[in-house]
Amino acid sequence: MSFVYAEKNTSIDQEIITIHSDTKIGLPDDAKANFSVEEIDLINKYGIVKFSIVGPTMCIAFAGNKIFLAAKLFAQLCEQKTFSVEEAIEKAYIVHNDADHYSDIEFIICSADDNVLRIDCIKDGSVQRNCSSAWLGSYKAFREFQRIRMSDPAKTPTEMTDSAFESVVQGCLDDSVGRFYISGSYRPDLKSFWYSERLALHSVKEQTVKAGEAIKFFLDPSDGGYSYRLIPCGVDSLLMDIDQMEPMILFSRGHRLLESNSNNPNLFGLMLPMLVKQKENGEIVRCR
Figure 1 (cartoon, rainbow, N blue to C red):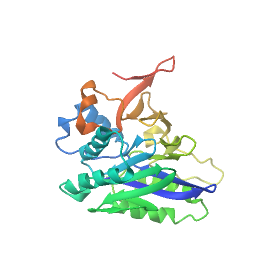
Figure 2: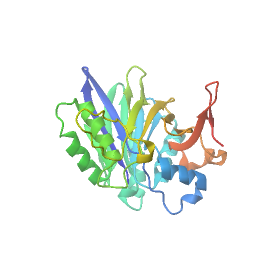
Figure 3: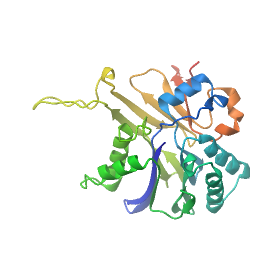
Figure 4: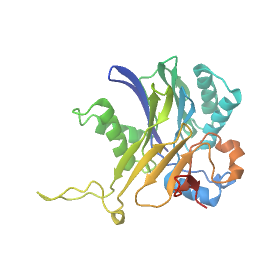
């Protein structure tokens, strides 16, 4: 399963659109047809980013374990080269409707044509147009997300959404949701959708703190605690630097672990993980 959420709201008198997703994914039994054993291991450990920026003014998120169907949509749009929002919706609906089950693949299309922000959702066999918000994937995760989000009215809407989504990714009633919290938004200054830079602390165990004792923001690695930074590297790559491990994780649709996968249509446009390291001169290279 998955959990993906997108919404429009207003920040500093400006309408904004944001997309949020976890990275956990369950691969089908025939995954070895497209992935090596090493790639399957990386995806099981780190997952994939479930939204791709297909153009400066369009971002497409998806949920469902048949990720090759998302790749099919991305390949069709790339082949067409130029397309309207309505054409993208139509193609996404056909891919969704032709799947064995509606839950195999669902889509949210976020767009900013002529500075008009739109969210369109394709799921349950229908198209929901011009939504103020939309979600895909686990209903249990969405219900818990809403509960947490409404429990702290003192925060701004953006703060409530970020905090609630991160809490759900770290642990909710659905164990098919998890790994890492990734977000993105439309940046008017760049005239493009962009992955969000983020510094995150993660703890899986509760801590008891006595009066006067210092609070640990995250626990030791032996207790499952870690911290990481997300660094966008353009519209096609996102770098994750985890303090407690030496290799970094690069989620990318432009770089592949194996050269043979560069032309694999079943992986086209997907933000897949690979391990990378930084050389002394600052260059990022793939780990062998």
